[in-house]
Structure formats: C-alpha cells, structure tokens
Amino acid sequence: MIEASNLSKRFGAVTAVRDVSLRAADGRITGLLGPNGAGKSTTLRILYTVLAPDSGDALIDGTSVVRSPLEARRSIGVLPHSAGVYPHLSARENILYYGALHGLARADREARADELIELLEMQDFAKRPARKLSQGQKMKTALARALIHRPRNVLLDEPTNGLDVMAVRGLRNLLLKLRDEGHCVLFSSHVMQEVAALCDDIVVISHGVVAAAGTPDAIRERTGQSNLEEAFVQLIGTGEGLQ
Amino acid sequence: MRAIFTVFGKEFRENLRDRRTLFSALVFGPLFSPLLFAVALALMIQRGDTQNDKPLQLAVSHTERAPNLISKLVEYGITVQPVTYDDDDARKAVQERRHKLVLMIPDSYGEQFTSARPAPLALYSDSSERFVERDVQRTKGILAAYSSNIARLRMMARGLDPMVLAPVAVHDVDVSTPASRSVLALGTMSTIILLTLLMGGLYLAIDATAGERERGSLESLLTVPVRREHLIYGKILAACAYMALSLALSVTALAFLLRFVGLESFGMSVNFGPLTALKVILVTLPLVPLGASLMTIVAAYTRSYREAQTYLGLVLLVPTLPLVFAAALGLQPTLGLMAIPSLGQHFLITSLLKDEAIPLIHVALSVGVTLGLGLALAAVAGRLYHREALLG
Image (cartoon, rainbow over all chains, first blue to last red; front, side):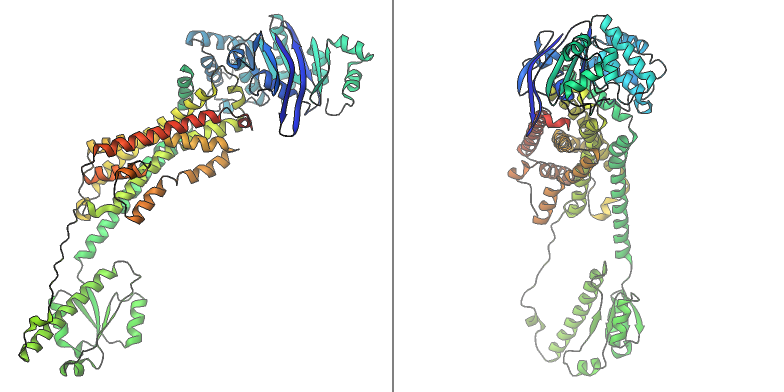
C-alpha cells in the first residue's frame, strides 16, 4: 500500500509537484494519468526514494520514504522511465545482480530468477548478453529485476513506452496477475486508453497537482460525463499532451 | 557492507567482458608502453655506442696549407677528407649535411703561422644537428692541444719557461655513478608506471558513473536497499582492482624488457630484479585508491561518456605535473616532498632503481598521506552520489 500526503518538489524556479496526495491500495492497479510534464515522473521518483520531497511524506506499507528510505526500498519494485540494463551481462545475470543487491541468498535468487524468466517467457534470451536484446526483451529483463525480491508494491514509470503490441499485452497480463496476487501496482501513463483499460483506480495529475482521483466510475460521475475521455479533458482543461 | 562486494564483483566481471576496457587497462598501457620505452632506450644506446666507436670524420679544406697540423690530426685518429672549398662552399656543405664538420684553412694561415701571429682557422658545424657537439668538442680539443704545443716550443725557443702559460691546472673529477647518470631514463620509467596505473581504471571509472547514467541503468540501481556510498565504493574498488593489475603488469613488463636493453653500456646499473619490482609495486600501490576516487569524482560530474573521456584525459596528466616540476627544478627527495602524491612515488621508485638507501620515514609519509587522501576522496565520491543532480 502506498499513501502519499502533500508531496511538493521544486527544481530551481520550477515547481514540479505541489501538495500531491494519493493512495494506491493492495490488490488494485492504480494509474497515474496526466499529460507530459504534469509531474508524474517526479511523483513516482519521490515514491521510489530517488528524489526527496521538499515537503510532505509518503508511506510504503507504513514506512516513511523520507525518514527510512532504505527500509521503504525493500518493499518496492521499480521500473523507471529509463530502465537500462548492463550490456555485458546476460539477461539472467542482470536479474541476479539485483537479487544480490537486495541481499537474497544465492540459491534463493537463482530460484526466483528462473521463476521470473518462466513467468515473463524469457527462456529464449535469458543467457544472451543484454546488448544483443530487443527493446521488449530489455524491458522484460528490467521488469524481472524489479520483481526479484518479491516486492509488495510495484511502481512503473510509463512502462509501455517504446513497446510493440505484443509486449504491451504481455505487460498488461503481468500487471493483472500481480494485482490478483494482492500486490499494489502503481503506474504512470499519458495514454488514456491504457489507463482506462487496466486501472481499478485513477489519479489524474496536471500541472503538478492532483486534479481528481477515484475509480473510473467515480470520475465519470463527478464530472457528469459518460465518456472517460471527455471526463479527463474536462478535468485537465485540455486534451493536449494526452493520447 | 556486503553490497560493496556485490557491486565490485559485478563491475569487475562486466569489464572483463568489455574488450575496450580490457585492452586499454591490461594490454595497451601496461605492455605496449614499456615495450615502446625499451625499444627507444635500446635504439638510443645502440646509437651512442656506434657514435663512440666511429672515427671522427673531418673535411679539411686546403690541406696543403698546413701539413704539420694535418699530420697531428691524423695522429689523433681523425680521418681527414681533403676538400677544396671557399667559405661559402664550406657553409653550404655543412648545411646540406654533406659533411658534419669542415675545417677551413685560409690562405693567410701559413704566413701568419711563420710570423708567429695567431694563424686563423675556421671550424664549420651545425649545432642543431644531433650528436655533433661531441665531435666539435673533440676537434677543438685536438686543435687546442696542438696550439699549446706549438706555443710551448716557441717559448722554449725564446728561452722562456712554458710553465708560465699555465698558472692553474684543473682536474675534472666526475663522481657520478652509473645509476645516477640515468636520471632521464628513470624519470621516464616512473612516468610510464604512474600513467599505466591510471589508465588501468580509466574506462571502468567512466563506465561506472557517466556510462551507467547514459545507459539509463543508474535510476534502477538507486532503488535497491543499499546506501548510495556503498554503491560507489564498490565501483571504486573495482577500478582499484584493475589499476593494481595494470600496475603489476607494467612493472613486471618493464623489469623483464629492460634485461634485453643492455643498460650497462648506457651507464645504468640494472637494479630491477624481481625483489625491486615487487618493492616498486608496493610503494606505488597507495596511489591506486587516490587515482580511482579522483577519476570517479570527475566522471560523476560529467554529463556523458564522451565528456567524461575528455576530462579524464586531462586527469591523466595530473600525476605527471609534479614529476615535470621536479625534473625542471632538479628537486631531490626531502621529507616534505614525500607528502606530495605521485612525486613521492616517483622519488621512491627512482631511489629503488638506483639502489639508494631510503629513509623509512620517507616511505611511511608517502604511503600514509597518499592513502589518506585516497580515502578522503572516496568519501567525497560517496557524498557526490547523494546529489539529486546525479540523475541528470
């Protein structure tokens, strides 16, 4: 479970996010929807402890990202916007490296890596050097490495970027599977269809502030629009930057 | 803490598979540069040998004007080539490298000589040409000996004691030892050792910082439950391992190759056995963490791989600066100078190769200060990794 309250972050003169509060529950997929530059990445970066907020705090399963970032990181799996892999290691070695960094014993991380390789259907390229992998295969490697330590909470920043249709389908199925296992899944996107198709809860973010949050039904109801797309446009003020 | 070794292991292994890193760290620097040095040294020695053995060639214009002088020159082992030049011809002949030296005996020589006035001679040479100075000195020495001989005979003929012409007698006493005469070669050697040491960690330092960011793998790495400074310590440690390997290889290569160079004839005693090589490695080793941390810090500030390469190229020059100053100012090892990283190591390496006694305090100070600075810089690198700007 992820609970953020009143997060604010400035970069110089630019306020990236202001007073952002949101809640992502266990066993649900929460979508962070907003146009490019709305503050989605900054919010996620604060949640996965790479950036420290200027004010506000967030709790990951009750652990503060501000006061105990190391502790909070144990229960999150992260797929950042640029999820590069190490070119001279094989896909499997890339995954195992993160297992070791998470402090898993050798036998444990090897078993878990093989489990993920099967789950993500990576058997064909698991032993190939990562520099020879396709974009989709690299994404799967990065995803597997984010899940090596069985995190309760999974955060993904624009995970479908640059993926082909098949890879997007695979990712969608995985997220649904994680949800059904009781994980808390939070991902950001500027693709409306994707969010509408996948999310149990939606947080609409625009100009660094939360414009609306709730289930798709609740958002439709609040805006008085029967169409989710129209609802978003009304909330954000414009459809610009969305797809 | 265990994460440091996890990161170390991964960086070490990954770079072992990167041919570019491997080539620059363990082949190009440590093996090629000693080889190049040894070949250059061998050529220099060979050239010096042949120079000494060759009889001096002297073109003499109008030998018929001074037969006595010519027979004296031949007596001293000079090969006289009779030519017939005027002043312009002589100048041209030297400029066009047809002769190294031309001795011109002017028309007035005989007349001046017989009337006991200074008889003119002109010696043409090009001082910008290598190795010519020695020949000039030798010719002048022979001419001076001939001149003072004649003077003595003339004085005796006039009933004077020739000794009045030598109020002082100077003896040249050269106390240099074979090893101390090879300062240049030694300086070059410690420069090679220090440079290859740094080159060993260069690509790893770039790859682990600027490279990691450029590939986009940094952000993921920062989400693992490991303190950021431990991540960077692991990377620095991996750079250290490559640098230490590079150091050991280059010193071994130097010690091995110099056996074939024939240093004795260059006037340098070979004091580069296995034990000396080991000592050289040990006194230079403290420079490894300092270099690795320095390169990591510089690379961490750059925005791209290419930029990091540019700046680190400059960092490679840093350790050679104290050496250049030391050579220019003729600095000798003192306790204070031992505290300067790279200069201290240079002095220690040089002393070891010269087989000089080294005060223990010199070693202790050099090792202590260099290691201390290295650890301090590693801590700075650790702090740098807490900057949010690191993400770029």
